[in-house]
Length: 399
Ligand SMILES: *Cc1c(COP(=O)(O)O)cnc(C)c1O
Image 1 (spheres, rainbow, N blue to C red):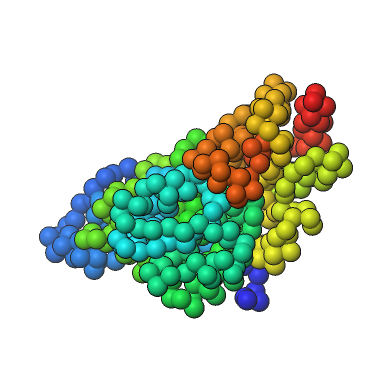
Image 2 (cartoon, helix red, strand yellow):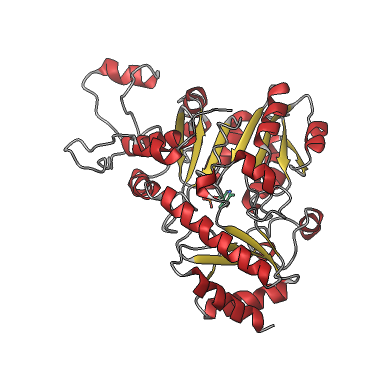
């Protein structure tokens, strides 16, 4: 691959994005529409021929452009586009790439909303989906059909924390002339899926990228061609379905993006610490930073080591009842909050089978190896992680 180390944080830092009055943060453009000095300039902009002109904020807004530029710098893509949610980013990409009669190959473990969209929503457009174990490359190859348009996966899957072999999946997709779409929500900066061979990278910025749990947002990072296609005024999915992010939010997310590298390192450091302590006390759990994780070596071969193995741990409490008891106890001790979502400064935990993966039928949960007692643990930015461990241990000792 590339010999020069890819440095997403420095690439963001290298941008010079000033406000027009010299403000160190770019000005917020809270305008839905834009004035033109000449009739010709407006027409040219409609035809996509006037570089640098803004038309209407469902299409592009300067504040969104600043954030998109920073995200593209982070991913190493030519361009990006920002959406009002992670689901908006995912659905925009899938609806842009697929027509009626097409086929999608997806990892069986994905975010519950993504699974529901693929499984329950796309059939009404006559788009067929096959779910496979994405770590089984033979199964992936065998599931490709002549009408397959894309392979969809998450770099680190939700909630099983499997790692997708992006270079290998890229090779398969290129061989068949199809697209590889990767959701990198759990692992920004840790993985650069585009540079590993993905065609399009999507994010729920609600999670680590924003990191504050004060908003819902998403992003699409891709080639200029793809971003132009989705924002085309005649037939672009983003332009016509209107999932755009509000510019006020873009502005606040951009400021949070500038601390993402520091946060990712701390999330990873704390998670690895807890994982090692969990191992010592014989707790059943899953964390890609442990050498016993089935894709640990694969992760090491793909990752940006300085950002660690991520902040997500899956603890297996065997039953939903035991998971509930643990979570309620941990919340009472203020280990963190019993809440869905992740990538927050406080620790968050939820039982996947009863929350963010409840869209996945129980028999499918079993099939993919998801325990009914799986507690998805998003480790926070705690300064004293040993103290946090002691609180978790107190909760575990109550069993
Ligand atoms: C949360 C999440 C989504 C959906 O994002 P929203 O911002 O809630 O729409 C998609 N993929 C993954 C992996 C997620 O964790």
